[in-house]
Amino acid sequence: SGLLTPGEVKRGMMVVFGISAALGLYLISVGGWPILILGVAAILSAIAYTGGPYPLGYHGLGDLFVFIFFGLAAVAGTYYLQTETITPAVWWMSFAMGLLTTAILVVNDLRDIENDRLGGKKSLAVRFGERFSQMEYVACILGAYLIVAGLALRGNLPPWSLLTLLTLPLAIRLLRSVRTDRGQTLNKTLAGTGQLELFYALALAAGLLIP
Image 1: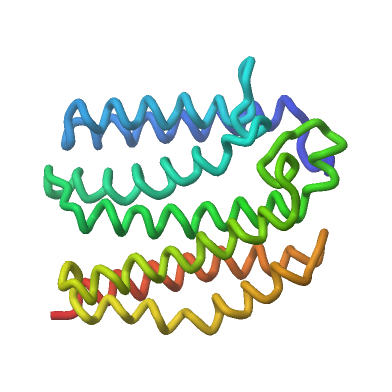
Image 2: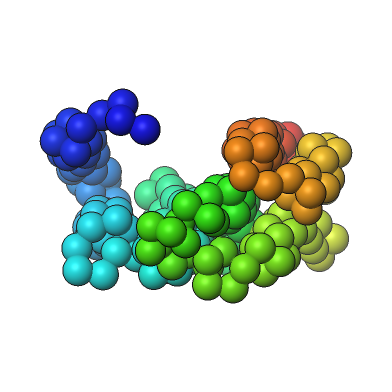
């Protein structure tokens, strides 16, 4: 949109990575080599998302990148940093958060499908079409709820974790809009999906903290 020049974007990226690296040094001192490996992998993948000889986001690998680093790595890594262990339930919860974060990218790519097609960006939406992206979005949203509900019913999470179900009305509205809206009208769905992830995470955290 012309708000920033390529040089400004590059400088901004360097500043952000510099701050992240500085903060990461402290986290490495606490968590050791696993956190170092995770941090390096995250930085390299972030650069490779739109840069390098094979940009991940331009070859249909953006969804996988987001799922791994904004779901598995973020949740499980944070838990490990504080406890030096990871339980199966933590992995499952990281899957749930990864699915919701991926849903944000899915609706973003669905919105931009025509521009991406013209620009040569081969997102999953471009590769497999609108119907595929709609189904992927539904799978991501429903999967997040089924994971936590299943863990709660099996006794792996406290019953209060079902507070996540309070966000279902918002999820249902988003599932409807992703089926009918196109182009820039999906901006509301995009913002709503971000809100859904936030409210879902807060509800899950509250459910885990309640005695």
